[in-house]
Length: 321
Image 1 (tube, rainbow, N blue to C red):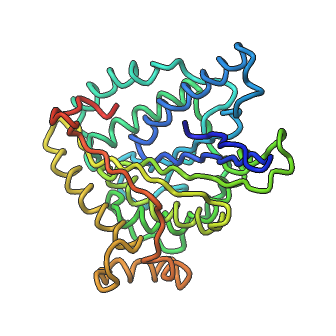
Image 2: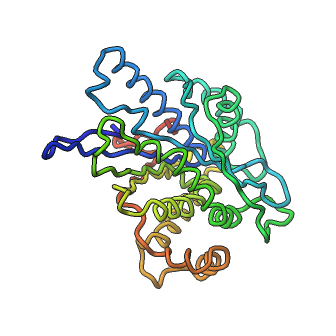
């Protein structure tokens, strides 16, 4: 359970809040898998009349999805360069909505070859279109500014372009996440004088999706910096390393996962200071300045779970679900 009430301690309930940040197509799938089920659990508690005795999952858990704009096109990155979405709290899909959508989407994505996009990105783009058309997600009000120097030129956006855009847009993105997603979970109508309220940040991200994986460190680093460690209980990451591409794109996705993990190790201090690539350091200094340079090498995640396609019995998972 993402949000829970611990045991009574000297008459005070110690509660943790859960903010679940979902990146890329796999993150969107995870949000659509978890969020409707939590809503159903809360409704079941209300029907049984036990909702006042247990935490309100609608209030203590919050979801947001961040997906790059992956439409293949030459020219500069669009503004904004990525979608920032949250579930529509007034309506939610049936529990198996996601599975039904993916059954047709994955077949379409396997047949369609889109230049510049991997199989996972094609699936994510199609899933995003369907859930937006069905009205299950809505954009967060984020004000992005036009970058002063766009270096993408007449070519598809690269991971470097998206990493740079993530740093430049991290400020307004995080302000929207805090005010619209995280702060509402910290409101407490039952224990208004509760002195200890912390948020556990869950990061759900596919390291095999080239553009989405480039946004993880800029957004999460800015979020933790904005909330301060006093208000953050833990930052727990679930990173998917798996590729389910049925074509030659699997090699690209698997290579991206390896490279993304290596970058995150450098950025979060899991390797020595001497292992910082000069290109990465120059890129951060160029677009983020001294404030972002100071964040390099600092611990960001309290726990990291790497999820692969291979199961404990050595069989292979058929899909990301």
